[in-house]
Image (cartoon, rainbow, N blue to C red; front, side, top):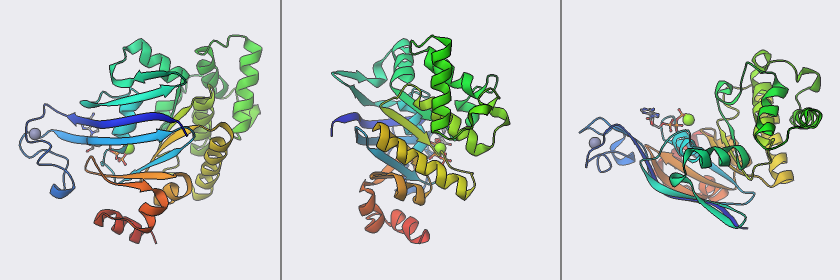
Length: 276
Ligand SMILES: Nc1ncnc2c1ncn2[C@@H]1O[C@H](COP(=O)(O)OP(=O)(O)OP(=O)(O)O)[C@@H](O)[C@H]1O
Ligand SMILES: [Mg+2]
Ligand SMILES: [Zn+2]
């Protein structure tokens, strides 16, 4: 399989930083807050590859830096240093050196994002169908009937009743809102999808159906995905490979089966044991 994304030495510090930030934070120090200057080392030296159609899991406790990684790749946040290369057919985009217009183009045409908080991913001032139409319009589809038909198909695909496509997603349940977000993210059939805690806080039965949907989409559309979660069950079900983060560092990486069956780091061992 072809590589679609290469992330190298991605780091993000919140605050001014000092020469001691990196050497005095991390798992060995049980903190991501620099004791010398108070800056937060949200991520440090994160590297990984993602191949076409592959699902990579990013696991770790709250505050470990999972969302930071995804946010920088989706241009919601600026990294402090590092490099990320996105390969699209014959082109390679150096993500962290693009100008805002180029970033917008990639977001609209090549990436999709499903946020934990539907407020961030959906516009509650327009209908569910309208949310999808907005994204189709950015992609040169402009015929009203065509857009409406495509929005209806996407909502049907994600099992949102099409007779509700004219309602605001504000009135939908949490599970339905996530489905609309997924439909919206898929509107352009992006080769790369980011999912940040997509099922967190939902009922178990709703969670299970959304996870099934994600797997079906991956198989159908061969979408590469980065799935951020603190839920080991989600990782086990979805991710072929997994990285585990703690205090901004990657402490474990490998095939998910290996990481879960033979974890090397004491922290991962405890995580796996506690989920048995
Ligand atoms: N804008 C910000 N300003 C200061 N610190 C921030 C900011 N955004 C994130 N952080 C800090 O960076 C660290 C990593 O945050 P991040 O959101 O990546 O964690 P996470 O692993 O996604 O956690 P969760 O599971 O709770 O979503 C945390 O300590 C967080 O408080
Ligand atoms: Mg997060
Ligand atoms: Zn510091």
